[in-house]
Image (cartoon, rainbow, N blue to C red; front, side, top):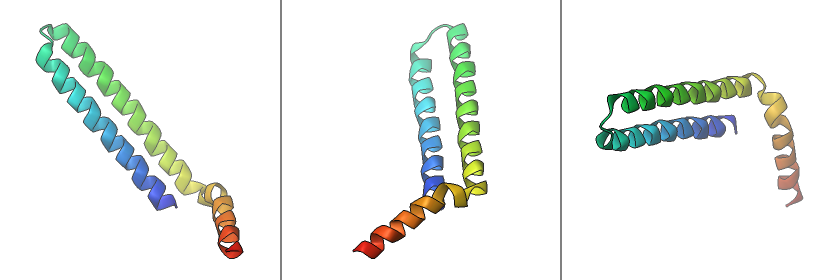
Amino acid sequence: MFSTDRLWAFGAVLALWATYFFVFWEVYQSAHNENVIMALAVSGALVLLFNTAAIVAMIVHYAHDKEIIYGLDIRYLDVMKNKN
């Protein structure tokens, strides 16, 4: 379960980065003011930095507390499997 969650988290980060680069590229082509482009680049970079750092921190937290986070899920999945 942890490896699947980690994979989805990294996939979400990759999708976020791809989306931001696509939006920046499309706006960059339309914007004619360098100040607007610089403001978009800086704010987008900050959003990417903080979101990526938050996802990495979440994955590290999940790695340290696997037993607590996934223990109940695994136990209840085993109970459900034994009922069938």
